[in-house]
Structure formats: structure tokens, C-alpha cells
Length: 340
Image (cartoon, rainbow, N blue to C red; front, side, top):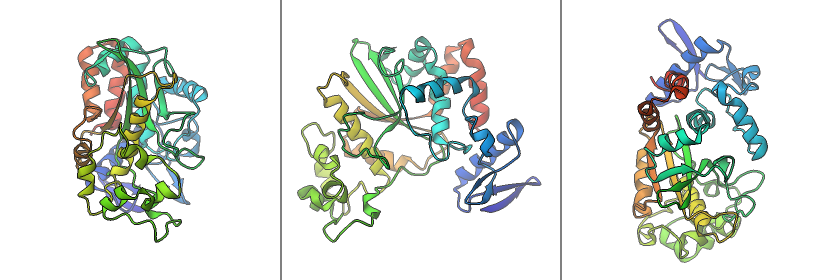
């Protein structure tokens, strides 16, 4: 923890922040001080101003108050874990709920707002999932990636079921990022269970023998089975050219989410009747750190239309253009909280 002084105000912040993170944290803390409390939260015994005290965290702040009941009821219907730092002003889980749930309260409005970004949306499929959406979505109980257990597993921050203009039922998986400078790295690469067998370079060696991947041979995850399978969207020839497995770093989370989308689309189970399944990343418009990984990932999937990225302001601008009175209060609140 480090103390920074700005305009005679002291901010207790993490030691290492990028310029974007620093500006965002200061902005979020100022909003917290003006609207919630000046009391810090604590992590490992140290006070941090971007964290909320336990009494406010228990009341689900910083989630937008009018959607708290919707959030709680959804969690009861589709149990999911609240993130460890959901009481952080920069919580991506809270920010994801704050961006999508106010729109999804009215499916007719949601189709119009979301349809400006996902242009094939005609109507929200309210008879699927929880009136058309699910937070922390995964293919429960099928677990087609075979990676879900008590400690880990691949899921998307939110999933939205919808009908396209040809009346096909589709699914849109979305990963939300706020201040993160990279996507989640490969845990297997750092695992203490790795042996001399588990060699992540060159990538061609892993392709020829997936047992070299700790996730494949020790964890029995299906990542490489799907990547090398008939329904794979990945350019295997391009993966071969990497000196190291391209999924060691930030591409790992993108890889796993795209594999989840691939499995759900290819499934013949009645639980997953979706004709097409898309995966997207949405991030803050000033967070440019994710662009390199997104660009590299697009190359690996041959710029397949099943993946695309967009920024949160695209949805906000779409909602503003719609000029619906029931969105005006939320739009004002959201922009004041997350934009600086």
C-alpha cells in the first residue's frame, strides 16, 4: 500500500498501478467519498480507499441500487460466486452487472440497445436462462471443457440468449473488463504439479503431443481436444509458429471462453438449443492495455465472426440515442461512476 497526495487529499492505493488504473482508482475513490463513505476497506490488515468497508460490501455496493434485488434473485436461481473483490470500487463483476442488468430489466429496450452493438439481435429470448440472461455462465451440468470444480472453471461474466432476424435462437457470451491490464494467465504453466513432461515450447510440440500440456495430461481438461477437433475455430498452422504455447499468457482466458462457446454451439443436447454462440470482450474505452491480446487472439481464430470486442461506451451511447426515460437515471449514475 502506498499513500498518494493529490489536491491536498490522501489516497491509499496499491503500490503498482498503470497510469490508467491510477486515474480510474482516484476517480472511483472520489465518487465513493462523495456518495457512499470516506471509510476504507481492509485487505491483509491494510486500509485501501478503493475498497468498501464490510457493512457496505454486505449491502452489495457498488452495485447500482435499483438492480440489487434483480441481482440477488438471479443468484438464488442460478447460484454463482460473488467475486472476492466485489466490494472493490473497480470490481469488474459489479461493473458488469451495472452495465447490463439495467438494460435487461426491460427485454424490449434491451433488444434495441444491445442490437446496436450485436447487430443480429432481434429479440431477447426471455424463455431461456433467467428471462434471457445468466451471470457467470457455464455449461452446467455438462461441463464440456471438464474444468469446473470447487476451485476453478471457465465461465463468462454474462450470457444473453436472443433471436436473430432469421428467428434463430443464439447465445452471446461476454467477458467484462474494467481496469485489468490483461486477461487471466494459464494456471497450469505455474502449477507446482508440473513435471519434466510438461513442456510448453515450442507450440508445435504441444500440438503433436497434447500430453505436454499440464492441463491436458494431469488435469484432463478438454482444451486441446476441442482446439484440435473438427469444430475448432483456431488456426492450428499459426499456433505452430509460436515459440511458446500462445495460451500461457493473457490469451488463455480468451481461449477457454471461445472453447466454451464452441462446445455449446456444437452440442446436440436439448439443454443447448442455440444455433450460433458468440463470445465478446467489453472493456472501458480508456483501457487500451487489452488490445494487443485481443488482436493476437483474432488472428488465431482467423478473424472468425464468433468473436469480437467492444467498449462500454458503445452500449451507453446506444442507450442515450434510444432516449428511453426509464434508462435516464441509470445512464447518469453509470457515467458519473465509471467515466472520467
